[in-house]
Image (cartoon, rainbow over all chains, first blue to last red):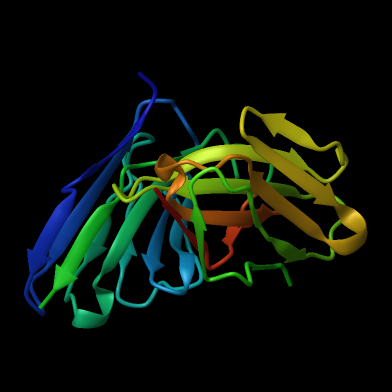
Length: 114
Length: 115
């Protein structure tokens, strides 16, 4: 089954404790991205990757890191999480860039930083 | 710059009523795509429709229909005979060239359908 998976689905952590949210897709997609969703703000892009070893900032990259060492994986790293990073996070992938290609979204990761 | 406005923050309707969710977009490109996604209480994003800027035909899928009007930069979504299972947050989104330009989402409309 073609899908985007994220782990964990739910995470409660404390300020400053490094964490990684994994994202994996099995569709051989070149493009992957991370969004965060906050009440009243919709979804905003954090980082994206056009292909392996190619990543770039989205609209709200501060406090996040990503890597794209393999085509299928695109982990989101919070080196020192803060309460303002409490949010619902979505990973997405598409064959190529999102302009013309349908993006497939993961199930979401609900993160709470205390 | 591209922008999507969903002016209706929350809507409540009684089951079997028709409801229209508004979406107004801004873009300088002549080539772009518009999307609608549904986010049920479980939290996942469910793709509903994609429409490119050259296709202004309205679309109907069961109880769902979409009205795309370039003249008013709107892409409205109507649910006919609403059901409780339609209760969700609905997002309208826009994408345009170049290839790495992200989807731009509206802030969403929360629809509550009351039995």
